[in-house]
Image 1 (cartoon, helix red, strand yellow):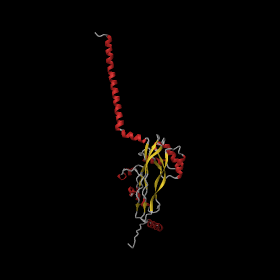
Image 2 (tube, one colour; image 1 turned 30 degrees about the vertical axis):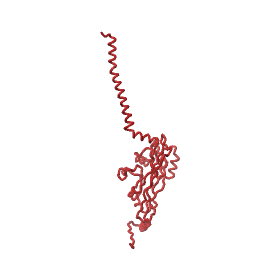
Image 3 (tube, helix red, strand yellow; image 1 turned 90 degrees about the horizontal axis):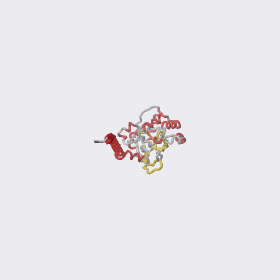
Length: 277
């Protein structure tokens, strides 16, 4: 006959069997979950986290290529490039975007709505890529930003190529103009491979011959610290200027025709023929 002590011992063992089994199952499931998690990090998401790790110490910054120069039939310059100062913002260094936009508007005279609109259009750009808020800034605007550098360290002044039209009064409608690529243009096959913020032709010759006039952007490879500040340059690929374009337009003849219409006080069209031909 089993003693009462033995009976109680068996009962205790039976009562402990289920909790121990549940504990073992929980431990096995926990280790299985950890194993799956490590596998996802090391295999499935390797490329993602490898890229993040690289971006923590190396960055590739674009160098804008100058657009091609446009000439008339006698190789007179119609459209060329000049250097311009641009005030840009690096989003990853921003603590309070609203305050930065407000202060920049105050010192530069550019409306808050205009600055915010630029930020909205550039929302898909990498956080470390400078976003041009004020293109072709005046010396006064640049000086104002420099005076508030401690309050707005996320702002940088960049020197970038901009278009210059020496013949501003002649055939302006023909030359057209340039501007940052729009969302609708980015969705078009014609602009495949073009990045947000790139300057493209919007109308006239600038638009019709955009593919020819656009150059090949360069790149600067830099090392940055933990907060995104550049500490070294490890390599650079120079940008390539766009191709030159020569038109059949005779600038002097065009200017004479437009001056004649202006002096006569009427609009119209001029047809010029060489009687010897």
